[in-house]
Image (cartoon, rainbow, N blue to C red):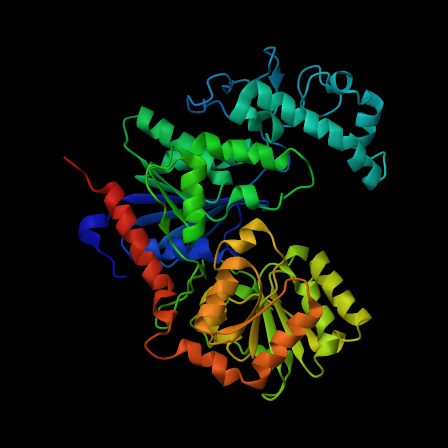
Length: 512
């Protein structure tokens, strides 16, 4: 898109995200394309960094704010009136059920077990001694979890009964960290529109909009729902995490002036879950394809090598693996976790003689990556597994293109079933045949387009069968990307950015 300074110059957009920005391609692309369209964009990330970091994504300014190591206290600004029974206090706490303050660490006045429930040990039959041992690490991990579970479920039942959706203030008070760090910066920027990425920043944005409107400014709120939270795998191993965040999102979803999301299926779920007045705008996680554009990551200070300017020649995946052109090469690019199914691929390699696997990951030294490599060694295929760091997202398609197959070996999990994920589009634009597990939306798409093969999730032998089928006739699968029926023209970030620009203009165009 081209800048349209006559209509948009001076209209400030603040984007919020709960990470350090540099590994989040959707967030980077959204900020960069909005700025290229003429909006005055500031992207604010919140992360565990030592000090504030600043750089530019084209015309967009990026600021990553440090989250304090200590738990933050709730800010003095009151939350919206949707939860009148729970208001912030200038002294740093939120009122408890009997009027006692509870700090954001979750410890109430008189609470001795660190649970956030006053006297929870006596109320729910878990001794204070055992609870203190858990909190202090005095029990083995497995035993500690067994002791902790009844307390956590009791906390959820108790605070949900008292505060309903507002129970997140007691169950997950760390959400206030993002408010304390980002809220004052947003207020200072005085935005015309706030774009909240994912679920943690929704409440931060909603409260900032409330403050702006109280000051006489008609600030708009766009919520970008990256995933379906009820189907998400909890980010922490406790019973409080999911119900707390579900309540948090339910409390603030109605404050959004518009919602965008990543798939049609998720759009329908959001309408159902939150009674949205209009269907969310679908912005696919498609890759940037305009090769002439400059770097999407233009740091103002030296950054890690993975963020070298994207206008340099893209690296070659096959060469970085040290492989000749005739060696079969599979690639998996993206986050690493058990439910992503990479273990299944490693276990299939003994059934695929001579086939190599490249893992393109954020941190090659991460604990789970080391576990996967160790598993490869146990299967005597470690010499055929290559671990490589990320490249800039604008280089990624060219980087992947020298592989033979792109892998998506996901386990069945609700959020895995409902969308075409980022790597799906990246593989497609690299013209790679895709081997995907039978997660619903991607399996249906691959079968419809003929761009790859589907295997049964977690089935090693069936994955090997699918790989052998593609390697036997790769041209058949690559043909899906050619001709008039190619899906690729609609699977570009440029097409998605146009939709976002139309939405911004609709929200910020004055009406009589």
